Length: 420
Image 1: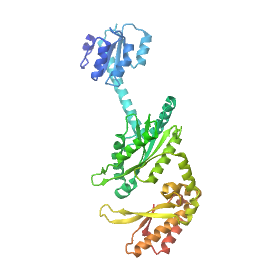
Image 2: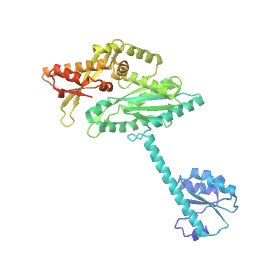
Image 3: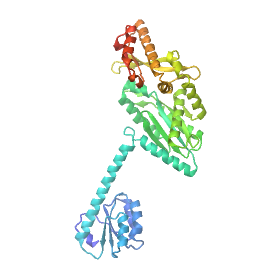
Image 4: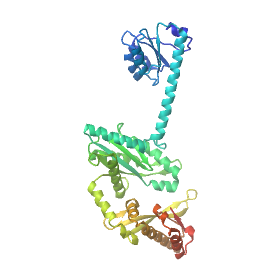
C-alpha cells in the first residue's frame, strides 16, 4: 500500500487482506486494476485468479501480481491466467510499480477494445441487422449443435419453420420499408412466446425458424407453434397504417423426421408449405408419406398445364398510396389440380421449370391475363395488368416477339402490360 501511494497514481485505492474479501469487492464494483500478492492468509494468487476473473464485474480486469519467491513456474502460471505483469516484492521501486499498473490498465483497455470489436463483427456476421435475431449462418451452426447434443443425450427436439401470411400484400401496397417495420415488430412478439432455452432465427425474407430443445412430442411442438401463430395475429401499427399478417408453421422432430440438419430443415419446410396450402394461421407436422404422394401427383401432371385449361388467375389491385386510386391489377396464377385442389405457384412452378413446361405455361398465363384486360376495357374499366414471369423465360429468344404479338392481337397498348 505504501508503495502504491508513493507511486503518485491518482486512483482511489482499496485494500483487503484475504482472497474472499477480494472476490466480494470485484463482484460489487468495477476496478481498473488489482494488485495481488501471491501469498494470502486464506489462499494463493494462482488459486484465486480464476475465481477473481469469473466474479469480476470488469471482464477485462487488469492484474499485477507481487511475489517474494521469484519462482519461474509461478510466473508462467500467472501469465497463462491473464496476469498482465509480475513483480518481485524485494524491489521497492514505486515508479516501477506505477509503470506496471499503467501498462496493465493499458493492456486491459486494448483487450476490451479488441473484444468489443470482435463482438460487433460477430453481431454483423451472425445476426440479422433488421430484427437482431440470429441469421441463417448462425442457425445452421446452432442446428448442428442441437443435433449433436440430442444425439449424445438420446433426446428429441423440435424444429419449427414459419412463414408470414399476407406479407407480400404489405410490401406491394405499402412498400418494402413498411415490410421491414413489420418484420422488426413481429420478431419480439415471437421471441416472447419462446422459452429461454429456445432459439429464434430469421432465415431470410419473411421466414423464421425456432429450435425447441427438450421438446419430446409432436403435440408439444404443435402447441408451441400455435402460440407463435397467435402472437403474430396481433395487429401491427406502422404509425400511418395498421396491418395484420398471419403465420403458417411447419414442424419437424429430431430424430423422427431427420438426423441431419439438411433433412430436418427440408422436412420442416415441406410441412410449412403444407400449412400454407391449408390456409392462414395453421401449424402442420411433417408426414413423409403425405409429402411424397403429393409431390408425385404434382410432378406427374405438370405437362397437363401447358394447355392452360387447369390454370386459374386470381387478381389483386395495386393501390396508389397517395390517392387511394387503383393503378393496376396483378395477376396471380393458381393450379386447379383435379385431385389436390387449388395449388399455389410455389408448389408447381419449380416442377414446371425442371420439366421445361414453364415456357408453354408462361404464355398460357400471359394470354389469360391479356384476355381479361380486354374484358375490363370492354366493360368500361380499362387498366394495366402485371404478370409474373419465371426467370427461365429470360432465356427464351422469342419472349419479346411473343409478348408484342399477344398485345397486337388484342389491340392493347404495350403500357397495358407489366412483366415482373
